[in-house]
Length: 614
Image 1 (spheres, rainbow, N blue to C red):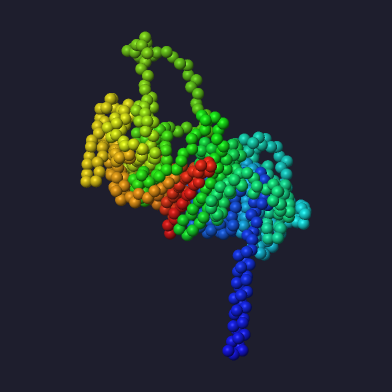
Image 2 (tube, rainbow, N blue to C red):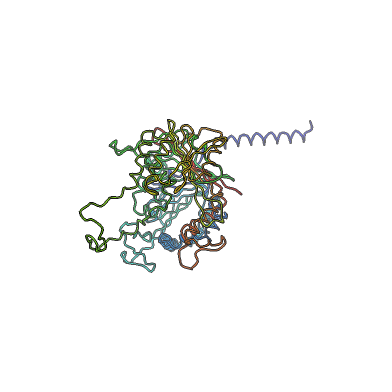
């Protein structure tokens, strides 16, 4: 071998050996410490991301953001009280920080490994720590205005503080018409009481806070890390949810102290889902988001509070079962559905009422509006009631709940092991009214009796639709694969019995569709407490058409490309404006599925999958 070849070979071996050693060193190099270990305790919730800048860039470049900002949903939100409060707080933060808090500023301070810790959602008190890329810290706008801040020192780190004091009366009403009384009430809570902005740079880490003590505590924890230090990482709600999670952290993680957050008036007033009753049973939650090109997946962990001291107050835990017997009747690609394990008799009756028996508008009262008191003087008798006998008691109309007695007794005697509820809007856009087709499938440990079910359903319907059983006739039908019963006359209802399964539908075509699906199902076991979902792509047009008719009292719906609202300065219609706009924003969302399971140690696991199309 010639000398040049020997030299080249030696260099290649050296490079390969060095690369292997470097790769081994990289594998053994410890991961960066969690930022939760540098966050003081007391936070209500924490938002963490291994690459916050990438998430922010993805959202800013997404078509969803552009559609949302231009849609009626954002227009409605921009007229809300909450939007006004947040806008005013943003202006005050910008004044205190001597910087414009716009999208460019947020992009500047968005680093890789990041954590947001919120301590008071009413006063907007938070601590933000992020790891900036090398050289990014020198380009921060905050550094160019740091001479306007007060300089403080904690250990070996300098931080900067600016406080914009408010000398105005705290019990006044400003130009926006919002009362500023700082009494902790949700309706008068005033985030403008927060005037402090503090920031520091420690190496490549940027710390930003709205309280001086939060920033100083974080700097001390970063300078003197200790396993015994009181931090967010060691708080019971945070440590317990992280320990209960069986998955790795995702692209975004949110950990919430529900025991402290849910009772707060400000949270209860502005929490959009308004499912406070459901949240009360949990003490903490954790949610991780994983993103791929075709889907988003969310893994949730919810810790149930300790059992109530008395057996009467504690509700029994629902165990997982195989929900495939009822899910085998689910038509693919359409509708909204929910399958639950061990439904209570009251829950089954509620779904039967809502989906099949009543099928009318539900009573609604705005909880923010007090009921009107009747101050009229009651009178006994009337001069026009000459035929009414005053010495006989008036007949009291039987409440509708009495008509459900037979059904309730049947469900209580043989509680269903699983229930599926299904709804889908009509795909016909030519009809004057778009009906919603519904169905309920019940699985029971024992076989159903068709005659008993027919009698109980007739008893439930007769007080609302007829006198006795007049006009409520069940007709039996058969085809090559199945048999069913149809209620004709004043009400339409279809019923099929297949062993331990009872299938009820709002009409015969819907029932036939469910029966046909069951013939080709794979019968794959699906163990869970709840499985739910909806097909957004299939239902979006029908939902928009139906809600436009309802919001406009039957007039022709507005064309899809026409903006909302009609009159500038007015709120858009809620369903055909706000909700339809939100649906248009996420029009690339195909479907969503939700799966919930429980463990014996009172930990609830939920998985939500968002499927996208391109």
